[in-house]
Image (cartoon, rainbow, N blue to C red; front, side, top):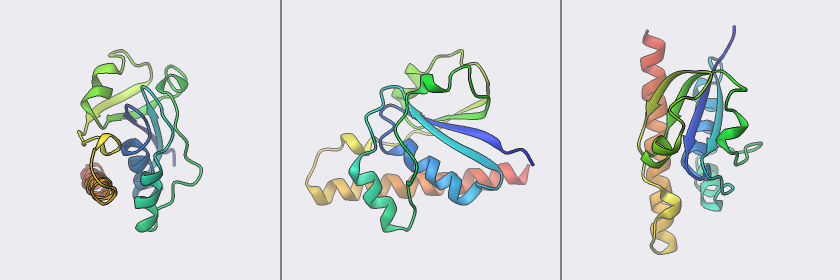
Length: 143
């Protein structure tokens, strides 16, 4: 069986897209091959690793990458942007893309607050992305 490649895109490729990549591997890995990238990659945020490890999901082997690493080189069945900024900065003509989807999640890495408030925001975004992945997988598998 050939797996459909999915690219998750956000600005920094430091939190949201990394989480989505890990969740798709965990829940849909037998049908999909997950990738992530950013328009301005910054490295994986330490709190991203922390909140994912809390629920037993590893980001092992994942790293922050620029979207240009994939443009015109890999065919993706889906390009899923996770923020409006990535949607605006992603080229409208992206060779090798089947369908584009937009899932908008707050940038937890830009959230300002106490350490506890920041972790709470990362957890909120993590949980939202996990639920979105599960919902999307159920919709895709029902077709």
